Length: 133
Length: 290
Image (cartoon, rainbow over all chains, first blue to last red; front, side, top):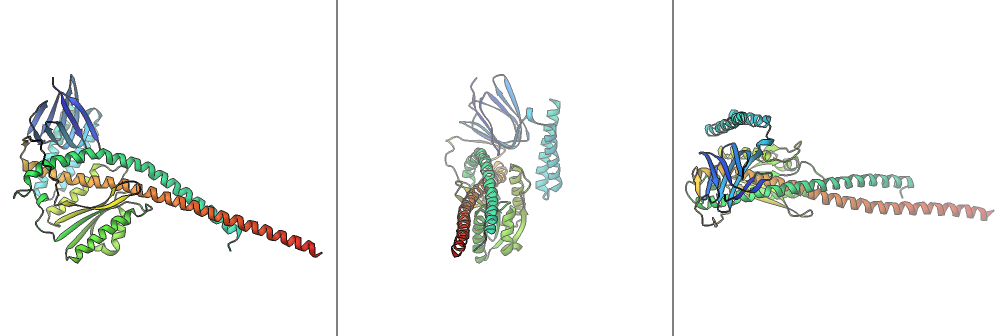
């Protein structure tokens, strides 16, 4: 199977930079998978889990506030938060949810409120998905 | 002429000071390395962000529906300055350099009849600007007590700026910080963040991009983040600059203290010698008189 270059970057550091077979991403308009030679594509991401497949191995990484850039050179994901699921502690997600709840409470404009509520819903989805797994 | 005892005390006191400056220099050197690493690690994110934005914005520039953050309000009446300085002093000209640049900027704007609002990040900047422009400071953000500078700090500042922008409290926002060139050279810099200036990269590699959701939506979502990234970069550069400035300032201080100790020791030894000679002469001439 053809591989392609995948980079996951958070503001603090380069989290991951490897050759991979497939990456599944939580896009705003629905999940999508990227294989080698994908057509150029740019999408914002929901808070959720990125699944990176290399051979028979799958690495799952929690991302929040990011976007994916598929270019001929490979796939780059920029995320405000990126934590491998294995290192993710339940209270971290809980803290994120608490933050989001505060944002909803603080929101001054209706626009900001909808956005904050969306974020909160996404985080709750992730939390329940993680609990199920 | 100070007495021997006085000289001895002074030498001891300068030695103590030298010990402190030496320790501060070493601490700053260690912190500088960490700050530089952090700035280094943040670079990929910033460059990628700039690339993507460049591609996106190339299409949006000049269009009527360009996001407000890029197009601006169409006026330049009210200016918001975000002045980033350190929390502590004793770092050479670091804080005063930034403040001087900001002050020049403020005076120029005021002379042109514009309105100025200030947000200070870091205690020293607030202290320095309070004297002349206290009434213009609308918010102070302190970084004290933060162990590491992470992205959420920058995101917090960005949120405050955007809130002000959305409620039409300012037209142009400029960020003041110090760029880290080397340990001895830090360059105070002013950077406009609203309206956001995008370096439009012409090379999309000839590829046609698919956007999800639309191009404008993505741009609208990315711009606030790009601003946060710029603030974050500025804070990291500032942190590195501060440690660099402190390191060289403390290095100088240590050297000066060394010079002073040498000079004082020389003086001490000379007066001691003079006293011994004097006593000898007294004894000898006393013996001769007999």
